[in-house]
Length: 309
Ligand code: PMV
Image 1 (cartoon, rainbow, N blue to C red):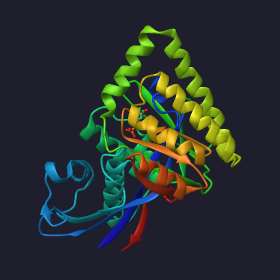
Image 2 (image 1 turned 30 degrees about the vertical axis):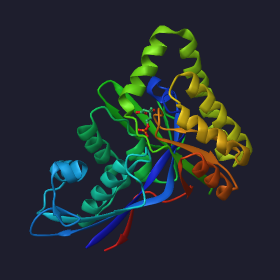
Image 3 (image 1 turned 90 degrees about the horizontal axis):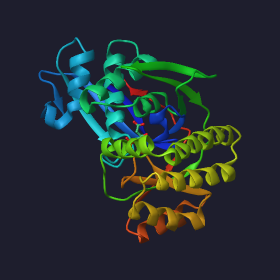
Image 4 (image 1 turned 90 degrees about the vertical axis):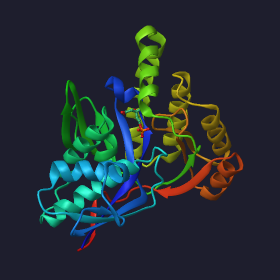
């Protein structure tokens, strides 16, 4: 039996603007999904015959990237599904990692590329943020231009992403899940409509790009106070673009008195927010008191990893 784990993720800065070619920073978080795989008489997941319904990601991963016989998969996860924390990327990365490891060699870049293929097949139009950060761990800086610390370049249709390594200090984040999951596609389309018609919206997108570049610098220097301020500014700009929601705003406002900064993370409209803090208990209590579901997580964690063979 091979046991491979992969982390969930948050987008620290740059969501939505990244769709317009601006940079984004994503961090792996200390919530992991574990996949134990072994040869078996039939392909199964957690004891049930593997189908599109119980795991479209593992189905697509096996179809595209496994030439051996049937496998059984046991999945256990700390990453809540449907909260925007990258659970589908983590299951894809961990199961591909297990297959690679059973074939004798788990190569990070190879897993990241295959995982992006699988997410694209299952979700349609995906970006490689979630799968790349879950594979690499630590943090990634994704941009439309090549820079130092390049990990890999991924392209699809006319789109191209340069994925760079980001050194990430151990920080504490509190995630606040609103309990509402809004699909990413319509929110991306909403921002695009706004930017197509308004030079003001395009300026906001440019401003988010500039803030994200500055955020990468602050992260490198471990300047958490400055990073937090940039996160809050980023949130306010995302709200102007129309992707916050009353629930997200409530959780951000509740967190700010005890945090360096707070913002929505991912597509918005619901989903989750994050707060950078050294008082996680206070922030978690504030989030819970406003109806959110808090998770205290650490950053600076490993990507895909063989935990047992
Ligand atoms: O909600 P998530 O984690 O799928 O993040 C979406 C991030 C966007 O920038 C809004 C879209 C994208 O594909 O980058």
